[in-house]
Image 1 (spheres, rainbow, N blue to C red):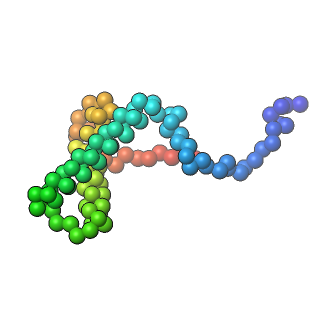
Image 2 (spheres, helix red, strand yellow):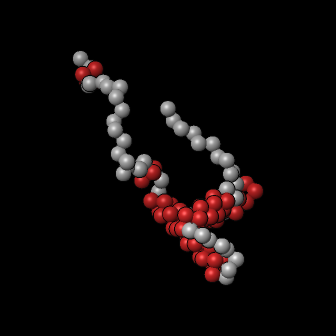
Image 3 (cartoon, rainbow, N blue to C red):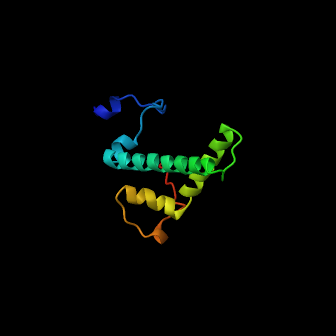
Amino acid sequence: MNELALAPQTTELLPADPAASPFKIVVDPAMRTRLRNALFELIENHDRELARHFSEGRLALDSYKEYIEIFANSLKQTMESREGVDYLLRACGFDVKVDEINLQPETRWKE
């Protein structure tokens, strides 16, 4: 008798472990570290620039809520720009022409 026929078959999905990341296995850990460090530096740069604008009196803020909204919008604008993506690519060791950066890559989910 075929051993595979004896294995129980189930159509239930295993519960996802929220702490598990498939990228730990698929993506080189050194690459993940470079990307994470680049993102941290980008965040720090945005924070320093907003603080500088505020301290020089060019940016009016009424609340921390408003600061967070402006901060998030600033990061969003950077990440939606070729220059922002270029910064991350270069920080990860890639040399790509800015005009070749795809700002709307297709996410190809497997079924």
